[in-house]
Every structure is written in structure tokens, then in C-alpha cells.
Image 1 (cartoon, helix red, strand yellow):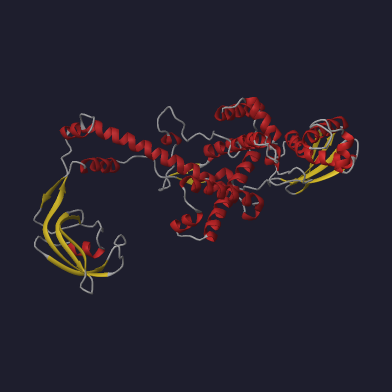
Image 2 (cartoon, one colour):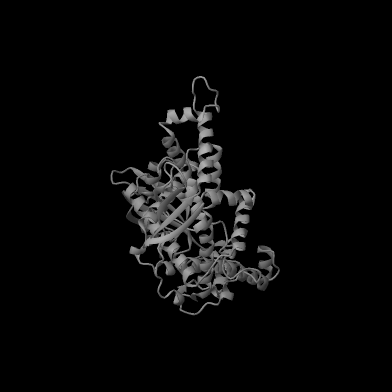
Length: 488
């Protein structure tokens, strides 16, 4: 079999495929043997039905050959994709040009491919990330949180203020005289807003013995939220939190460190790791978003967006099924309608496709290529994750016409790594952030690795396996290429 490709119009390619007569004859023989096992003809055992009888039942030799070709063309097409390294984004338009009745088979397959989009200014992108540097004030705040666990409530003679704890009797009455709330000796933190916003306003500046009267609505957690209630509150005492002194003795009791300096050093190190990871994630997301913004919306093929929406809907349905939640329940819980959900998913899908196209364009601009050795390494890694042999994974990807997709995903990973190395990184104040500041420790990379499972392809490998084992009418090659047997 031989295959060539030719660009016929923007974002469309014609594959011209030629299959030798000998290979067509082998395909025809396989089809006859399969039909012979399946067809039940009186007087003949399964598998022993003569070819002439099968031809008669199928409507003649040409009809039998046509059926065999309909079964075989999807596999020929998938092999042509591998040979030409075309990565289609839509089902092909197949046109058999010769060999329908006899001789060698030739056919054309016109497919849509991703556009090569312009990304002007990609080399001068700037990304803002949260500063990875740790200030002494942040260490102090972490130290205070630790001190909070050992705090004591101490009565004070001054008026109450936010953060104080007051002991109160609180009673609320509805306009009809029904009691809506009643609590005695309630320990309440001023400013917490747990009962009603007006309560905090009344307590600020209150002293022991004060009786407070005000009207406010019930909070959202109440069985009847929003109803107006007349409150009467007696302030019994006012206490403030007294934090323990920051001493070596306290540090030894509150932590595994013997001194405050050691404790502060540990808090600083932990904060640095957290802030570095936050900055790393912000860099990755921000750099990809900035690159995607260079792609014009009208450059995005709707067929890719439609497919991305379909994948998101399938993933959402899978998660809902796992949680035992119906779509209607999910919509009710999230407070959105079906149209709103679809619009949200479509917006996400559109942005994801823009990112995909932008990375592919960057790989092209910078001539980032994937060697055969790198491709083989990825296949071996996929095989390890799927607990299959590399040969099995390679064969399934080849039959599905997905080798080019694996290589494309690797090129995208290289493009993403290039992008992270070349964007200008600044903090919220506009100060340049060194990549060294994004390291969690000296043994890790400045940013998380871009390597990982080739998105969307490993599932395809297992799907190919499932199609074979379950005897599905759609083969793995068809699952990857969009050609359905019998549909030529």
C-alpha cells in the first residue's frame, strides 16, 4: 500500500491511497472466509460455504467485493494516516477512484486538519505571578496562628471590640410574638457574623451589663431566613484572647523545635515552598493563557470546539454517575440551567482549543521536532502506565492512525517547556522574578515538569483493546479516524 498527501485548500488535505491487487485479493479472501463462518446456508457447515454460493446470496461477485472493500477501507485509511503522519480533526470524505470491480484499489480521502495559526509577539510575553518571597510579616502571621491554639480568654474592663469573646443572653421575637431565637450564656466572638450582622454592630463598644435592643433579619442558616426579628441581648462579660509570649520555652512546648529562631526558620521554609508552588502554577496557567490570547477567535475550527465540549460532557457525566447524582440534581445544586452549563463548557472548550493551536504554532515557529527515539520513549512510558508491552501499544496506535497524534502531543510539551523558559516573569509590583525563586528546593525544577500522559491518547489505546475484545462493530482504527465500516 502506498499513500501520499496534498494540501487542497486551507486546513484540508487529500490523501491518495493505492492498494496493490494482491493485497486487495487477500482482503477479499479474508472477507469470504469470515462470511462463510457467519452465513447459515442449508446443506453447508459453517465455514464451508462455497464462494459462488456466497456471491449469489450477496448479489453477485461485485457486490461481495464491494462489501469487503467497505470493511477494509477504514484500515487502509488508518495506515495511510500513519504513513503520511497526518493528524485529522474530522471524519474523512472517501472517494473510491478505481478497483471497485477488479484490480488494484485506489481511493482519495479528504480530511480537515488543524490550522497553523499566527501568534504574533509570542517571544515577548510577560506573566505576573504572586511573589514567591516570604516576608517577616508573613512569618509573624503564621507564628500568631500557632499561638492562637494556646490562647487564653481573659476578662477585660474595656468595651467590646472585634475579636473579643463576649458571654451574652440573646432572645429574638418575631412580630407576631413567637420566639425565634433563645440562648443564655452564649460565648460569641464579636465580628464573626454568626447570628446577625446587626448583633456585631450593637456589640462593638458594649460594656458588661449593657442591654442591647435592635431589629435584624434572620441569617441564611436559619429555617426562616430573612424574617425580621426583634432582638434583646444582655452582655454578661467581655474577654479578649491572650496569646502566649513568644519565648523559647513556648516554642519547645508548641512544636518540635527548641528555640523560636528554629521555629521561625521552619515556618519560613514551609511558606517558601507553598508560595513557590503557587507561583509555579500561576506561571504555567498565565503563560499558556497569554499565548492563547494571541490566537484570533475566528481561527478556531468549530469542529474542534464541538469535540472538546463533547469530551467535557462525557467526563462530567462520568463523575456524576460515580457520585450517584443525576444531571437534573447537579443543575439544581449549581443553580444553573442546561443552556448555562453548555455555554460554560463551550467557553472552556474554546479556550482549550486556542491553547492547543497556540502551542502547535509555537512548535512550528521554533522548529521543535520529536525524534524517533523520543517517540519510542513515549510509547514505552504509555505501555508502562497501561501495563502493556510497547509492541502492543505501538500496534494499536498504528491501527488507529494515532502515531502522528502522539508525536504532536510531544511537540506541544516541548513548546510549553520553551514557553516557560522564555516568558518574562514579574510579581504584582512589576519586579522581575528569578526562576531560582520558584524552586522548592535545589533538587527540583524551577517549574513543574511538562511531561506526562499524552492527553486523550492512552484512553484511546484501551478503547481499541475494548473494541476488539467485545467484538464491537467499530474497530480501533475507526474509533481513531472517524471512518465507519459500511459507510464508504
